[in-house]
Each structure stands twice: as structure tokens, then as C-alpha cells.
Length: 362
Image (cartoon, rainbow, N blue to C red; front, side, top):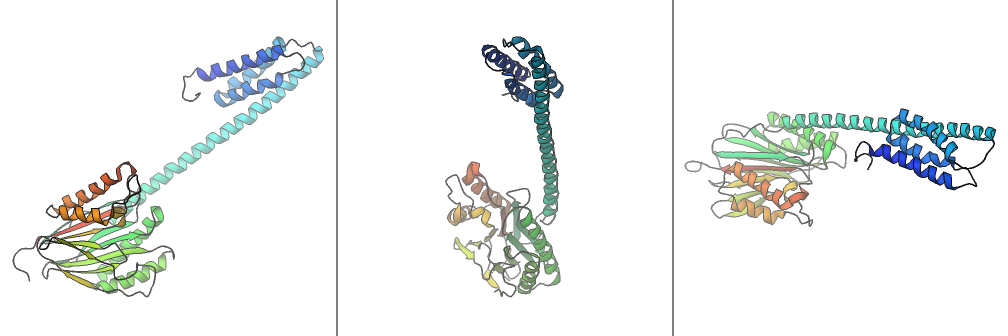
């Protein structure tokens, strides 16, 4: 009340406390109640300036000396008042020192919090540098992607890596955990994936070397789920390796069915000697491939009910005629509306590839 009320309220509170103690002191004749003035002085030490509190100490002593009806020897009264002055000054000093230390601690914590927020913002800026600036220009493909971290920094990652005029490599990954530790491992994964893509075009060898590199720099409890896909617009196929990641959805326009591109090996970083399998699927005009992280399907509403694969598949099937950008936004908005005020508890990443081939198949 003193901090939120008007400026005069603390003064009125202290003066009212002094008046209440003086009234009780006036009623009691058997003993001296001078020690009760500790309470209004303590309140003053907390709410008012130090100078005001110290000036109230002699005021309280004079009020007690004048208002108390007890008959006492003048020398004893002088000694009593002097002792009260020392005790009151000591108590006020201790309380004010405590208040100063607490305010200093609060300022230090606030400064550390501000510094931490600045560091997190810098880390978020560095993390965004690993994400694609815009969609690649590959004839026959319409590509859109987005990443929404649940905190300032996240553990999701996606990228487009053009191989030639007809082929592009798409990567999406999800680091276990959240926050700064996941973001650091994500940055290491993104940098290593870029280096591996420029070094070799064999996806299986890329994943094997990446598994060794990530396993060497990460904790045993941390791992990365990874989905690497190559889409060849000339051959109209998608080759992919799924390392423990959520199965991508392939909407086949001819049959209007959804095919799951399932996992074929464990996540990256768990087993340095794991072996993966390369899978292939055909593509036709109108097909849509949707890559995502579990932040979409595991998004929960207020009833702790998950968005789930069934709702997600329905959104993809119903929005198959939309552009890649529109479908990406539609998926995100559908999951966000499902969560409501709860919001996303995990990072959300979505990549949509829409096939719009021209002419006859190669």
C-alpha cells in the first residue's frame, strides 16, 4: 500500500503509529513502554528517507518523556532516554543497512538480467544468420520456410542448399532441449552441415561424418534429429535420410493421399557408428512435401491436448492448393489458434515444398 498509494501515505502511516504507541504509553503506568517506539521507527526506516527517520528518534523520546505519566527520578529518566536514543539509532541503522543492501542486490540482479537479455539477443542474431534469407530459385519448385523459437533462442534449424540448377538439398533439424544450450548445438550443427554439403554430395556420408562431429562436441544426453532431403526436378524424385526426425508428409496430388517419409536411423550424436538408409520417392506436378519439427504436432491447448498428426495432416491436405508460403502460414496459424493463450512451448519450424513441374517427366 505504501509503494502503490499516494506520496503522503508513508508519512501518515508513521505518524499514526507514533500516535498509537504514545496513547498506549500514556495508559500504562506500571512499566515504561518506550521500546514500543521501535515499531514506528522501523516503519519509517523502511519507507522514509534516512534523514527523516533519524530526526524522528528524538521526537519519539520527547513524546514518551512528556506523555508518559510515570513518576521517575530525573537522573533515571535521563539515563532511560539516553539508552533509548542509542537503541533506536542502532535498530534504525541496522534496518536501513538491510534496505540498502537489498536495493543494491536488486540493482545488481536487474543489471545482470539486462546483460543476459542483451547476450540472448546477440545469440539470437547469430542464430538467425544460419537460417536462409529467402527461398532459393529452383525451377519447378516453390519453397517456403519459417522458424519460430519458443524463447529468444531455439534449437531448431532449417536450410536450403542448392546443388545444381535442377537439384536442391533441404535440411531440417531439432536439437534436444531448449534455450541457450540447444541453440549452441544447433549452431554447431548448421555450420557442420554447410561444410559437409560443400565437401561431398553423398547424403549418407554427410550424415555419417556429421554424426561423428556432433557426437564429439555434444553431451551424451544431447542429440539432434535430422532430416536431409534432395529434390531432383529433372528426375522428379526426392531422396532423403531421416535420422530420428518427425516423418515429413508427402501429399500426392494424383491420389490426394498423404505419405509419411519415416525415419530410418537413430538421431545424430547418440551412436557414433550408426548406419542410415537412403530412401527415394517419386514426385509429380502438384505434390507437396512438408517438413516440420515436433513443436507443431506436440503443441498443446489449455486442456493439455496435442495438436497431433491427424489435425496437421488435415491442414496439409486441405491447403494443398495454396502456395507454399500460404500453406506455411496456414499450418502455423492453425497450430497457434489451437494452442490459444497457452502458446507454443517448443520451437516451431515448418518448410513447405510445392512441385510445379512443366512438360513431360524426364
